[in-house]
Length: 91
Image (cartoon, rainbow, N blue to C red; front, side):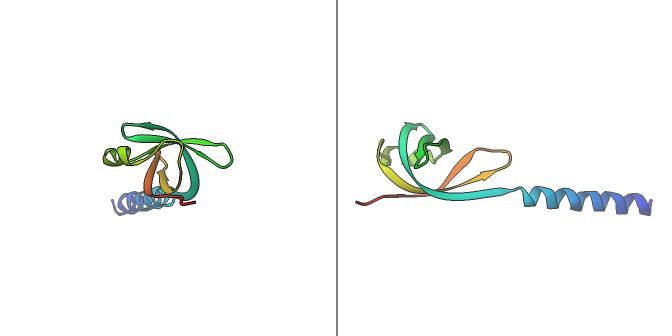
């Protein structure tokens, strides 16, 4: 019984460490807004790579298409990109 408990505890700890280590990837870059949808935006970075980023629905009307913004966003292993912050680029 004691060996089973220790084995289960060890397996649980290993699982938690793996999940924690793969939890979040965070990045920030200057992007151009290509498309605005209800709850997401399609952005293109300076390398031409497009990503669909989930945003709060309340800010969709504040973002202007074809404008440049600095955005930072997170990605977890089991979900898509989620906006963390956004700032317009002032020229």
